[in-house]
Image (cartoon, rainbow, N blue to C red; front, side):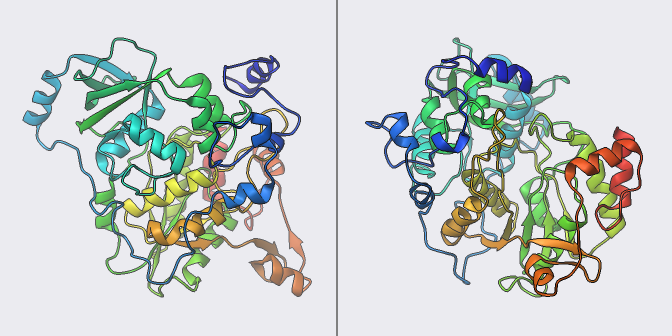
Length: 449
């Protein structure tokens, strides 16, 4: 649904049962993971103070220097993919029906099968779903940021059925699923706990309320084929093989083209106190569906490939993640850390307002600028991934990129270029300053326009 259409829908007093319509202040009704929702009115929940909201995210002590590194989440890297054509043919022949996966479901199925979502071996059961929603933990106590579910409106799926899951557009068999159970989720509670709000102005809430099916289906998966995409996504096992052994690996998450400030940020992360001197950065962009106004995945992929060639930095490794963004702020930061742990990373750069989102109506932020960083730091030790806070870098005429506090202390002349101005210059064919963007990246963006 386009934003204009959403605004029109949100004008109604009761848009979707259990979800909040548009308000003049997105933060006013936002709450973050209440300890108990039952017995509280939405208004009472909304009146929680910011301090209360932030405290509710804190569930573990800050990270220590002896954090266990690069061990898959849960101890074992899952691999559900069949290896031979004979095995695949037999699995397909045993299926009762075929169902096509939408782009979001396709990403989830791939990450279950290749171990990116280890220790999951299928779409979550109702018990697992409820536990993750309410406690951000699996029933066995293992941390897990967001539920991974198969959604549908079909009413003919029954326990024991075997389903062949196929990629839309090319008829490629991706996986088989043996249905475990079919259940009706508590979507208002899911959004309230996972996104911190049940307002439909939040893109993740809109996705759960208006795009996901009314039933969730659990089921063990068996992998058949890697999805066909414009970009090649290596499995966690393949990515681990490409990484240097016995050194720190710092993950950098992004979903947009990388410009000079980003590059300075993740290369300087190697100088962080808790990163070993021979460590490397793994740039790991999400290349699945994101927000409607983001740059298309195939274009972003080309920007990364040309930048990899231009910089040719031996301490920077590149890989791509087939992941569908939820824009869930702190809870999604945990999900990203967990996934990168499965891909072999020991450290994770937590950016300002990571996986954040703005109201589609008012433009207000749903999360505080540092909530994701605080939540990540609080869970870092238990999760087994060390946090590297992102630097606040600015460009100066005298010394190039420095931290904002250094620029202030030295009274350096700062230069800036807004995203809006950059896009205007891009469309108008104007020269983009090289201190802001790499020429190779600009050329790709221009050719796409």
